[in-house]
Image 1 (cartoon, helix red, strand yellow):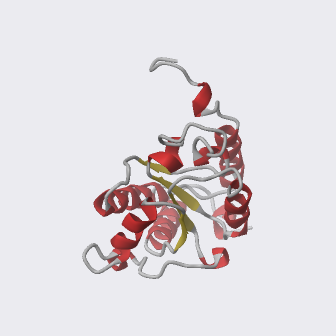
Image 2 (cartoon, rainbow, N blue to C red):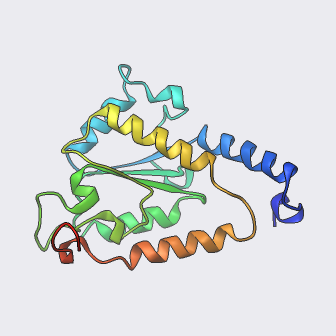
Length: 184
């Protein structure tokens, strides 16, 4: 029950959506989930040379209850998958996920029984960041693209339903290990 549900669609709601989008994208607090070599590049992005502080992200949160952006940096083992999901579930809504690196996006070179073949089988991913490991500039570009997506997000009664449908579709997607060929 928010303001957006009580107002008719139009200029006022559009202004409220733009204001809410601006506030959300300008105050992302990342939860670190650095699991491998990509975590070093994520830490470098927060250092003085690249300075994520200009996006309001200078403090990486250790508590999921204080974060709304999860950056999964590195390979996720099957043992770590339930922990990742638990941390995602503890984050406050709305929440976003960046899969950083080839291992987080698709399992990378580790095509075996111990590594999850894409973190999107555990949590819904908003931005995929390729590379092994991706450079800090690439992470900053992914964050800027996420800012655009957040700024354009709609409000209203159907938002929760849309989020549930997108999450269900992402979790029901065909595993990357089963995809064969480029045109499948």
